[in-house]
Image 1: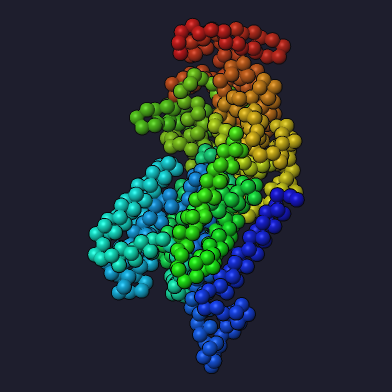
Image 2 (image 1 turned 180 degrees about the vertical axis):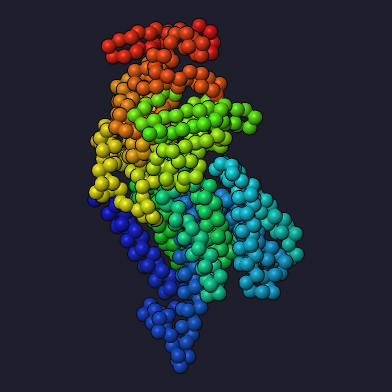
Length: 337
Length: 262
């Protein structure tokens, strides 16, 4: 099979997997609604019948936003991981590297700490989004026209500072409940999100992902290094800005509504790279689908593994992701030897 | 027609001026060897011609101001082979060569480099460098020499009239050094031009139509190989003693020993 047809097959398979997981995410939950009933309620609605109306409410206001957010957030994480790895030509790059996740978390923590989140339901995601945007402006300003390394260093600096401020907020937290709320929020979860969250994060995720997807050609030329890429007509400064901004917008909005979810942006591009012949442009759509599939699967898993216990999504991705990453490192070492 | 005209080109890194007020013209059919000791400013001159480093002075490509051209337009006029042979991901050799077609692909997706004429150009570039049999191999798993040939093929696939190369023969065995020089020479004869930084004086003497000798950021000598590569000039600039002979195959230059540390 040629490289191109196997790539098309991979995209088709990933799309199928995403569709199945999306359906599962809609039909798994504590309400115990039968598979057929749930889909019927979602699509047809249920005017006049009070029992059906409850089902419709669960489907449209609880499960649908949860599945949509899972898909969008997973796509943002997978895609931005793939773009950053291509840009920095480093397989260890991931969205957290830019300080976006840490700063969005800081914004959210401040919202909880100050009580702003209790006053106004969108206070938390809006402050988190603001945190992400401040981070990207800082990183861009600090990196200036410098190279790739300065971006990483600026990201690390912003990330550490945001982490330190988050610790300070925990440290000075007025009461244990606020501290607990902060910690729980930081673990990352898709539970109890509404369509309002979808409308808040959706446009940002869409715009950010579009900016990231457009960088494929430029990332291909970057395979040969900065100078060769520029001699092939690639505007490196522009690619870098689009990658950083796109990541900040998409991942910032994601973190704003779910909290920090680790490892997806790192592991998904890794896993898919060999399946696309390592071509950076082809890795982008594949990683977006793969990230969506991974988050949807993890979110279904937290509901099945510990129903009623509210196992956090971010905890599960880290528990599964870290050993998996170790295995990848082990395999890479064996290949190198 | 002139393909590259540099007038009063200067490059500075901070306070250190590495290229000082250099003027140089390269016309169709020329294969120019840029030689000079380490740190003479050869690489900086090439990179400045491509707009990869900030420079003052004029840079003209095909009689057009290079600074006013779009990046794609410039990439269709001049191809560049950097000194480092980076290939970051284990992509196939064909993929690497296809990257040379990037500046010719208009729009978001552009022409498919695997079909029709585009594919023929890529195939021909691989054929020229003798790497057709490597097309499906991973580029990161090749030997150093194979990798250099793949990257030269990538530059050829760009089909730009002017070819700038930074030490293209380093890492190649003698046979492939000759193939490389022959390729550049053929590119020049077929109406293009090439400018290559070279450390191997023997290769420069044998293949280049003109030699430009740089020292401390300036052009110290320029002309036909026989006029520039003289024992006196090489002793003066490199501090070496050379063996030279005029043979049926052209000028032979072989460095012998250092007469004073350069």
